[in-house]
Length: 391
Image (cartoon, rainbow, N blue to C red):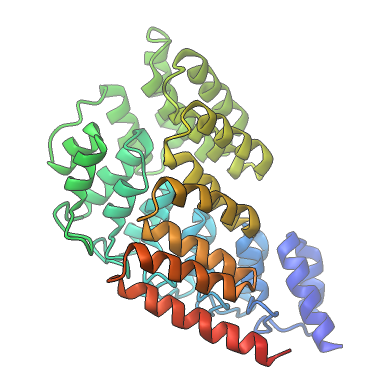
């Protein structure tokens, strides 16, 4: 009976059913119970961004630092998925800001990689080390450059990281710095930021961003709107107003602006990324995937949109589809070890440990000196042996 109660608690937490959660806690369900994937009820709530339920479970004593089977904690999961409200709750509850994910990255790294500006700000305000490097040798700054696209959103993340002391000359495991990566990728505005030169942004944008940094969203929007009355086709202003609106959960208004800029700036694919992110916040994945697919169709050789589509598929637990996207990316860039690791981790999540080992061995052929492949191969072999022993 206790196990059934505990399983129901995990299910109700995932669904965001606060009433059911309250009742199950009264009946004695345990916040420490883990399912087959090592998830507590809190982890299940965090994965679905169920803020009220997460707050209640933390209040009931759920540990924000408990690891599930892939080494994620509720705290790290919130950071990786851009759930800044839950991230704040976990920090208030004593999250270990030095804890790392399976790649050796803190919560700051995936939030920088995925374009979660507000989450990056929460991480930095919490004191997470800005120059910490993961097992790939990447800092948050390197991730934002390598896995970003040099657009407005990533430039803002990079600007924030630089203001907090990020080192643009810190090398990755191949000896290449953020500045060198930006130069190779032709990210002109990012290069300006990394050299600590003036971005030359519109005065209205600078004023609005200053207000935003003190959470004065309502005050920031009129600053942008005043200029938009005369500069109706200014894509930069549309982006900032749309970003502010989406952060305030005024999603439909944000989408309207992003759609307008899509129509006016057909070669600026950034707005497909912004609309996809907005649909993600609205918990409308199919609409988000449609936006990624439009950008991929317009520029099939650009890996950025397919990579972020695969990220979202993994977050949703749709690992079969994520592997398919990774296979396409690896066809385009077979030497990308981060692509290989993401494919391997999805295969492991599916319990396909033999296929994961095969994928690592294939990656070793392209980069035989990478020590991380041997580490992950050993982990997959251990999981395969465990799975075979349970049969």
